[in-house]
Length: 253
Image 1 (cartoon, rainbow, N blue to C red):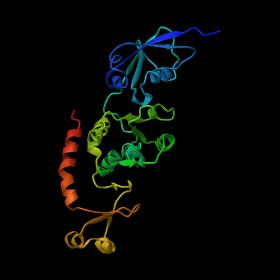
Image 2 (cartoon, rainbow, N blue to C red; image 1 turned 30 degrees about the horizontal axis):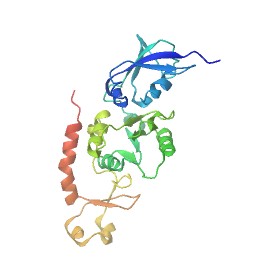
Image 3 (cartoon, rainbow, N blue to C red; image 1 turned 45 degrees about the vertical axis):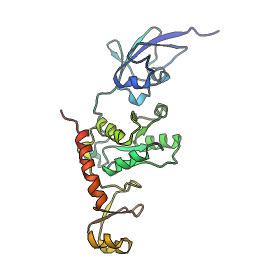
């Protein structure tokens, strides 16, 4: 015998409409279901990943993701208030205030985050299962262009990049967590995410090109991959752009 079909109505607010079709945006959506279904399951069946949700309301009552949905209910779903709180209290824990893992379509964004000093794990061969496992095990925010990946049950913190343009993606991330005040440019390796160390020029002299050896004296070394950095022409070109990014990303009260 078939179970009676039930229905609940959902209304999504703000940026959560980005996950809906144009005809559904800003409109109540009737969702049909059978049996015992949780709020999380039905919200994600409509295309909205749970890490993007801030608050779920049934009338005057807040609902949790594991609440069971009753027939005929009207549920409102809100995005979180921005900027989001940082995952780690770095003052108390000594940890990085926020750490990221990025899917294999976001290599340029990973480089930019490292350039500004943020811990960003990226490899172009990481599969979805590995990304989810790293996010869960290491408490990293998962950044992705695949909103279905964010629906995995183990993912606690994640964000679906709206833009496809890396520099716009960078602004999205910086603004979402108000990270501009925490930026520490040129402290991480752009290539591998390692923390850079100051190194005496004499120690790396044999690895330098003649003109670099002649004109520069301050160097940093990535102990993980061996990449050497100095404040050359590339640094001078990047500095104005980085200052402009931080100004654009700064959230004023």
